[in-house]
Length: 149
Image (cartoon, rainbow, N blue to C red; front, side):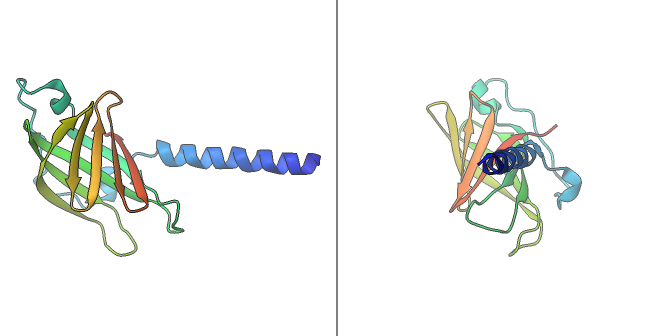
């Protein structure tokens, strides 16, 4: 019985360490194919602070609890933001089906209940204004993005 308890304890400690390592990792720009003309424009000071807060560089790691393929790093650069739209560059690392790449889009944004909601292709994102974090999802995959210096 003591061995079983010890084995369970070791398993949970190891699992917790793996989760912490995965969550603490912020992607590094050198691991991505970056657009050569990437430029973040300071938001107009007359915009609401909630909208201005979206501006900047965000990074995170896609996870999928149903897959055995590991993680995919991604960056989201909000180059320019206006009251109802933003110019964003979505950059991802290598995946099983696609090589690292980037795409730039002008995306409609809307504010609802302390969130700014937007979509890039089929990916749904929401910026939690109070927590200053961007959450994304597509099918069974999720990502939590934090500010990247």
